[in-house]
Image 1: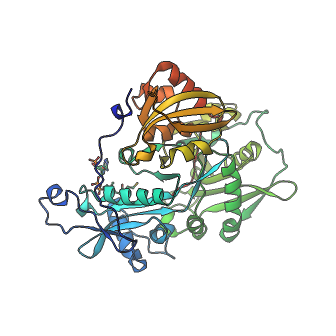
Image 2: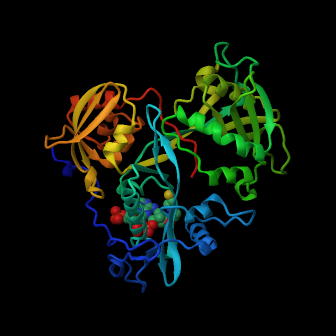
Image 3: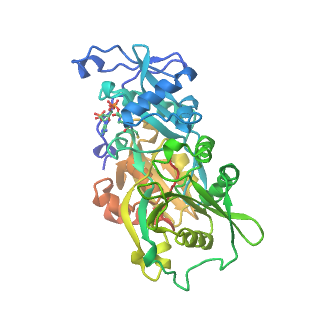
Length: 452
Ligand SMILES: CC(C)(COP(=O)(O)OP(=O)(O)OC[C@H]1O[C@@H](n2cnc3c(N)ncnc32)[C@H](O)[C@@H]1OP(=O)(O)O)[C@@H](O)C(=O)NCCC(=O)NCCS
C-alpha cells in the first residue's frame, strides 16, 4: 500500500520562503485569477504592529460578526497578536487577515506535557475571503513553528471543515451537559469528602492567584488538557462585561481540604429572568469545575447542584463525565451535544509519538501522508515496548495508512483505529488495525476545557 493513496488533495504552498520577520513576504499565488471581479493589490504577509490592536480586532469583529468590546483593558485575544507566531496580511496598507498563537502546553496520554502553541484569532475580512489568505498565513505560521522545533500545535475550530486540509485532526471532544436539579439524587456510594472540604467564596483577584495552580494540577492528570495562557487568566479575573452576555458576574468558590490546602474550584454565572432578577428557575452556567481528585470533583458537583433559586445547570465536560453514574437517576443529566473541541497538528511525528505513554506493546508499519511537511511523510516502523514508543523510518510497505490529521486523532486516544478506518480516515489490514487500536488505547477519554 502506498502512503500517497490516502490523504488530502495535493497542496501547492502559495508563498515563497519568507524574509526576516517584520519585513513581509509576498503571498500572491493565483491572486489575480482567483478574484477577477476585484482589482486587488498583492497582499503582504508580515508581523502585526503593536499600534494595530484596534484594527486587528476590527478584522476579527467583522469576520466573526460581533462588536469589539468597549470595556476595560485589551483582551487576551487582542494581545495575542503581539505574541510569537502571529502574522497578518496587509492589502493597500491595512491588515485584512490575521492569525496568532498563545504560548501553551498540552498534556498527552501518560502525563507528559508537549509545547503546543495555541493558534487563535484566525480571521479574514469578508471582502478578502477565498483568495488564499488563510492558506498563506497558516502555511507561514506552521513553517515558523517547524523551524523552531515545535512538536505540535493546537486550535479550536469555528467550523469543522476548515482545518483538516492543513493537517489538523480532532484531539478532544466535549459533552454539553444539562442537569435537571429536581431529578438529582446522589447514590450512597458516590464519592465525596463527606464534610472534609471547606468552601469559601473567592473574589476575582484571589481567583487569579489560585486558579492557575489548580488548573495545572488538574491538567497533569488529564490528557488532552492545555495550559491556560496568563493572558486568558487575566481576562477571567477581569470578567469583562462584554463576556457576560446578560448573565451574572462570574462567582468563584474555593474548596480546601481539612489541612487547608486548596484542592478545587468552581466558577459559574447565573442566567436570571427577563427582568434581570434572580428567580426560582434560573439557569446556572458552570464556567469551570476544577479538581484533580474525583471525590473533590463530585463534592463540587454537589455544591453547584444545590444552589437556591435555580432549576437547571449546564456545563461542558468530558464525554466520560462520571456524574450521571453517581446519581440514582442518570437521566437527570442530558447530553445536549457532543462536539469537537481541540484540534491538533502534529509537526514532528517522532517527537510527538515519543512523548506519549503507551499501555500495550506492539509493532506495526504505518504510513503517514503529510504533503505539507515531508519529514513526517512516508513509512514508519512503530514499536511500543514497556510503555515507550520508537518510530523509525522504514522502506517496508505500511499495513495501515492515513493522513497526518488521523494520526493526531488516534494519538490522543479520542477515537479508535477501527472507527477511523470505518469512516475512511485510515486504510489498512484489519489485523493491524486491531493491534493499533490496542496500542493507542488510553485509560481515560481526553478532555480540554480551555477556550483559546
Ligand atoms: C475561515 C476563514 C479564515 C477562511 O479564510 P480564507 O482566506 O477565505 O481561506 P482561503 O481562501 O485561504 O482558503 C483556504 C482553503 O480553506 C477552504 N475554506 C475556507 N474557508 C472555509 C470554510 N469556512 N469552510 C470550509 N472550507 C473553507 C477553502 O476552500 C480553501 O480550500 P483549498 O485551498 O483546499 O481549495 C475566513 O472565511 C473567516 O475569517 N471566516 C470567519 C471567521 C472564522 O471562522 N475564522 C476561523 C476561526 S477558527
